[in-house]
Image (tube, rainbow over all chains, first blue to last red; front, side):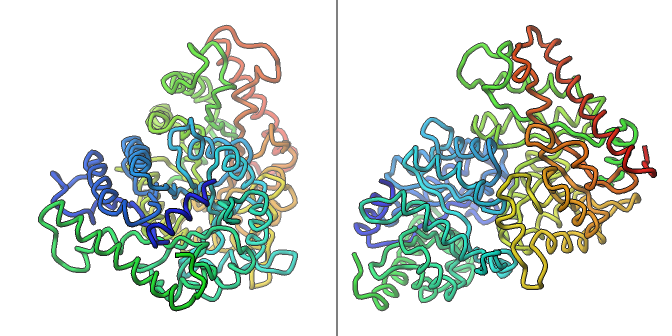
Length: 302
Length: 302
């Protein structure tokens, strides 16, 4: 079961933090670039270097497909190759595509991203719930059939996330709460020995108080927590996304890990030096999050 | 301006109906298939045949990217080629991808799908609003900069669409109404000589009463109306999506046009025969919708 494997990795590596593999061309160190123009072929090299230097530190990676779609079909080929490469390194892969549609279209997306004989074959897929809960069912079905997981947007990390997630459902609770209750119900029928379900929720690191309430409503659904670092979420902010056992959430960072040379103002001179910098950032995040959890919770499983 | 060109095509062809180019492998006539397994290379041939036989009838086509993503990178290459092929045939292309994300990720999607130097370069992109109105801004900006359009999901055609779109915004109106007001405001700053804006809305054909209210709230935003035919929407149902001039909406059908052999129970024997069947379905839909509009509205512009 996926969550059991995920939790095993988190405990062994003492790390619930993951890294987004987001190739923003203009931010990739110059040493990778032969030309100034977009070059899909070097993106794989860059991404593989990142994966190599963090594979023993993190339980999972999260490639964001938008940053591959900018290269068109070539980019999707690299996306598929990156998923496969991360799998070779025994990493769990979260395909951050926020797909959404209804009926047979949702089934096509689920096949493309979560089926073992499909082109991507990721472990988790992020999905967006606007078309309603019936539109989520094909993704849940695919996850169950293939031993995969889904993270449904519940509360995103941007300032405007309240526009929709805080609207009132006819039942009298806010949409994010109503979605949480729905995921809690579905998750109860699909969970591992750990009790945790891979029918998960995206809950932004930037809304600490919200997170506490959502955690209570869906205590055993895994959370994917974006917004750490570059978007303003701190180690203290993400504590309420976790349970007392220090489990139940994955904290994700991309820019803060991948592009330290931008804030440092000094470009790495070699691939090895770049990898050392990235690894240092990943370790720093792990330390901050782990220490914050240790301070908050007595019953940490790791 | 995109809406002016679109309206010119609608008036000239006397047709506000468009066709979804959705290659569902198991539904494509056997005559196209050399093997039972998915074969991306024949998908282009099939799609080009469909486009050839309807290009003089419809103002636009709407490829749904999910049905290309199932073939992975090869499918995305075909998707890009189909968009280019439709452009060669002077068709407007609606890239039905329902993308959604925040900040620089939304900007990456907008570049990939709506930029002239990006890999897709569609005319319109469908987007999903769950992350909030700030997440839509990069798509609107890209549309404005590149002379393109966006259709935002407001009310989808599935039974469960009410889950989220009917929730109450803090301002006291339903989310679909609140989104409509937002699109109306944005659309007023980006419209063609016709007065119509390509900052559009997806409004399902299956919710006729809703459509009338939404039409009033955003009289000059173009509507994309899915759910005709196979999903249950009738010609009478879609009338309230239009204005008195018979403009303001595009009615889309996919399965009902593409796969008449499934309901007929007889497979076409030749590509020409298949094209005749598809063309017949497209003409039938055009007739039904045009007649319903003529019955309802005196002031038709065509």
